[in-house]
Amino acid sequence: MSYPETLRSERNSAVYMAFFVCAVLAILGSLFANGDVSGWRWLHYLTKPTATLLLLVAVFKNISASPRTYGNAVAIGLVFAAAGDAFLMLPGDYFLAGLICFLLTHCAYIFALTRDARFAAHPGVFGLFALVAFAVVGGLWTALPPEMRIPVIIYAVALGAMAAQAISRRRQLKGTSQQETARLAAYGGLLFMISDSLLAYGRFRWQIPYTPLWVLGTYYAAQYLFARSTETHDNKR
Image (cartoon, rainbow, N blue to C red; front, top):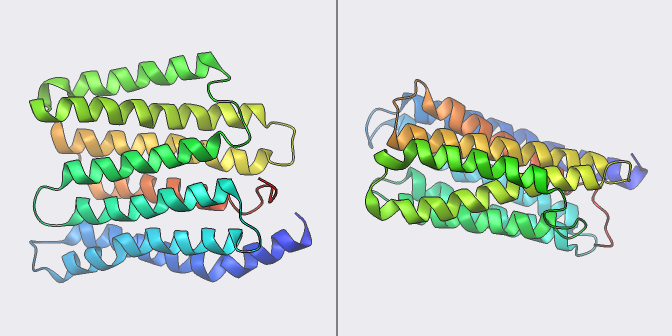
């Protein structure tokens, strides 16, 4: 790691520490909340979007020296994700609004992941993720309200394409100076797919014990990896 990259990582260490604290508190608040007036519920309300916004701060600090398309696209994705966080945690049924926000997050990440790698360069990877997305939607189909079926299909296609492109990009950039950041984004894509699948099944199909722990744990790990993938990305792009 070069000296400027080391400084950048150190500059963000406090931000990442604050993110981890907020992420843990958000998970605890969701696990122990008992009604909308619970103190744990308000802790969840405060820390859930704050954790995502702290990652946005870290990404902005990474790209402040010179504008970069990759970092800017990840930042836009995090903005939509923070909005989605808010919609999904508020009282009332704002699931569709949250779904649209996270759909835009995945679109932003797909754009980022195609700045230095060809889209769908590995058809086998995309075929595998298409099968996974089909299996996830198929398992939910009878439990989904009719009005949610088309939105869920569209979302599953975008989510699968994002994760597949993250893996494909990792393979395309293997052996280059960007292979480590590409690896972080690839893991992030996989964890995002796991998180969203758990969220959907926990909402529509099964009662999953300690759902917030698994859903938010994988979600925050995914977002953290995407944020870290902007640290040493080529500044010329």
